Every structure is written in structure tokens, then in C-alpha cells.
Length: 184
Image (tube, rainbow, N blue to C red; front, top):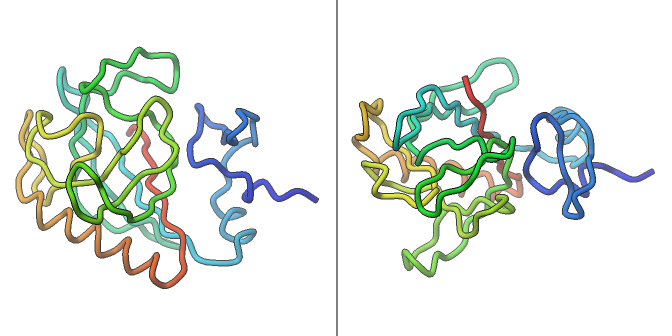
């Protein structure tokens, strides 16, 4: 029997997982994915809660078996609802709602190892990184310790380091890591 988790691409269209051939794999079931992979998953959920004219605020949570733990805040470009047919404006659009596998690899642009979100529709080279305003991103999620106010978020370097170290630890232990984006 074919295992859906083996074909998992890393993003969902509305409420369904889509594989690399565009085939609908059905409704996401994170528990089934965990069991079928036979190893642990770390899921960081970026919950978007404020959609501004040129920014999108979010809160990042570590999903646990019973509880979720606050990790940091996030800021992105404008959420243009790409997953439901919205139009991307280059350099000014947040990535679509979905679930994306995270790896750590070398960024040519930044010249260092960073978190890389894989298989983001209409985007390439999406990184989770530090930044204080929407001007500091071209679609990548920015993270910060301070709750964003307008187009400003503080203490982003410590938050980016915290998230990077969490992901690096899990990947080093052989676990998979995912960045999940939802709207509140």
C-alpha cells in the first residue's frame, strides 16, 4: 500500500496536501504523518493574526502533544491569499498558507547556514530570518521576540537564533521539522 507521507510535498492547498505532481493527497493528518514516518516531527505554527497594508503579523508556536508553547512573533509581507488565487506582487507578498518542510543549508544571499522552507509555491529561497520591518524581507518570514506594532518588530536576532537552534537540534537528532502557516 502506498504511503501518503512518502509523497508529502510540504504545502497544502486550502485543506488538502498536494504532492509534487499536483495530485491531491487529501486532508492533512499530522498524527498519521508522524506514525508513518516512524520518527519525530517538530512543527512550528506561524499563526497570522493581523493583516496590515504592507505587513502581516503572526505568532509562532511549538506544537506539543498536549500543549503549544509560544516561541516568538513573526512579521511578513502582505498576505495576498495566494493559496486561493490571490496575485503575487514580487518582493511584497507573504508566502501562502500551508505546511513546509524545513532544512538548514547555506544561503548564497546571506553567506551563512539558515533555515530554508522547501517547496513554497511561487517562491524560491524562502528563509526564516531576522528583520525589523517589512522592508527587510521579500516574502520570507521574519521572527522577533517583541510583539510587532505596525511595521516594526524588535529583538529579531535573538529570536532568529532561538528558532535556528531549535530546528538544528531536531534535525541533528534525525527528526523532521515543519513550518505551518495558518490564519487566526
